[in-house]
Every structure is written in C-alpha cells, then in structure tokens.
Image (cartoon, rainbow, N blue to C red; front, side, top):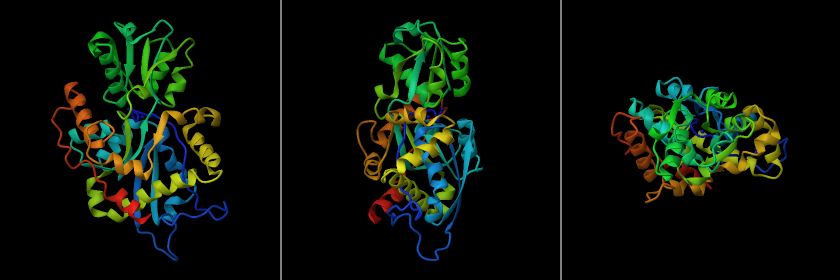
Length: 342
C-alpha cells in the first residue's frame, strides 16, 4: 500500500458474530448447526490499513464462523508476500492491482476476486522543508519502492508538472528503508504508504506534498488468489469473501468499531490514536461498491479500465517485460454470490 505499494488508506468496519459481544449475527457468517469445515486456505497480508480488517476476522473467529480454517500469515516485507503467492507458498494475498499485474508478467497465474479498498490519501509524497512544489523536486534525491503504487503515484505527480522520472534522482528503495533514509536526511523526498508515512513525517519540517487523494481510483487493493486454488477450491474462496464482508459488518455494528480499531492498531504496531488518523486515507469498499468496480467502464474507477492503464504504465516504464494478458484477471462470481445471498 510496494505496499502494498499502497497502504493507501484507512479503515473501519465489520461484524461480530460473537454471542458474548451481544451483537446481532450476520447470516452470511453464521455456520449451520454442527457444520463441518469446508477446508482451509493460507492468506498473506502486510502493513496497509485496508488489509488490517483480516486481523479482526481472525481475532473475532469470523473465519471459523464461515466454516473455513485460515492460516493468516503476516509479512513484514510486502514484496515477500507477493513472492509467496507467486511461488505457491500461500493461496491468497492482499496486494495492489499493479503488483498483481507485475507478478503475472513474471509467470504467476492470479485472479482478483475482491476489492478491499482504494487509497484516498494514505499514499503520500513527503518532502523536506526546502521543497515547495513538484517542480522543486528537479535534480533532487527521491525514493520509492520500484514498481509499487507509490512509484506509480510519483510518476503521475511528475507528469502533472510536465516532468518525468528522469528529472529527479530516483532511488529505488524498499518502503520502510526509504522512510528511515528520509528521516535520516539522506533523501529530499520519499513516496510511501501508511503507516510509513507517519514515520517519514517525523523528520523536522517535513510536509505532505502530494497524495493518492489527488488521483481518485488510481490505487486499489485486492484479495488475490492463485488461479489453481480458485479452480480447485471455489467453496473456500467463497467462504473467505463471505468472511471479509462479515468482518466489515461487524466493524460497522454498534460500538464494535472501537474494538476493531484496537485490534488493527495493535497489528499495525502504532498507538490507537495514530491508527485512527489513517481512516480518511483509505476507502473500504462495500459489496455494492465492489459490484460496481467489477463492471466494465471507461474510467479508472472501474477495474477493467484501471488494469489497462496500470499495465500501460508498467510497460511504458519498463517495469514489466511483456504486454500481459489480463483478460481473465478479474473474477466477480464470488462477490456476486455473496450479494445474491443478502
């Protein structure tokens, strides 16, 4: 959020099925009497506000209530989670559209089944006090994780000022290390996602110059599966999609958001008050917004169009080697099935 090349955005949400919590149960997350587990899956996620609800799903037994055993694996390094999915070490991962297309270029066969969120400000270009505009970045040392959405956003910002990556001293650097280097005064600017934005802003005099809110819809985050797993275990995929929306219902029910925020802040490793500052920077998608995003459309709020634009960016900037076939990238049958059960 590479972030994820984009941690783009905050969070909030979901539904508790715990009787002890005294909450109304969601029929989509409530198991039948004496129901048997339908199977298991390995799910990877990393530091991005739009993905922390999965921790809520685990802590509140929402996976179990949907009759699936999920091995939820945390990755300190987002890039490692992408590699783990591509090499079959996990069955599904939380990752951006851009990173998914890059992985397909590398030989992975992946399927996007759900949109977790759009970044609406949690991906930021943070600069030193001497930088007042994008034009001021000319000749300056600017870091981002190459090929991530934050790299994408940096290029977009430069293009808006009629500049290119060639006009700056671009330094490819893993996100957390880039934030550290910026704070240490080794860089003039950095493009990172939350929560590393908070770290970068600890440099005295640093400010946010640009963010994903300037490019609505351009940075999206998804639940992505290995196609072989989808083909072999559609019931498990459905159970995980159901669990996601049950979690959002839990988080949005009554006072549950308080407990959910505490769970997510703990997973993020930041104080609760700091975590709550990320909320406006991430737009978590409802089931209706998911269904709309998976439709065909002519702007980047639609995934089919966004995928084409993202592929073009990656290819033009030599971040992928081939004109990747993305015709089978999107699969909306699981969100459609969930919606039809409501």
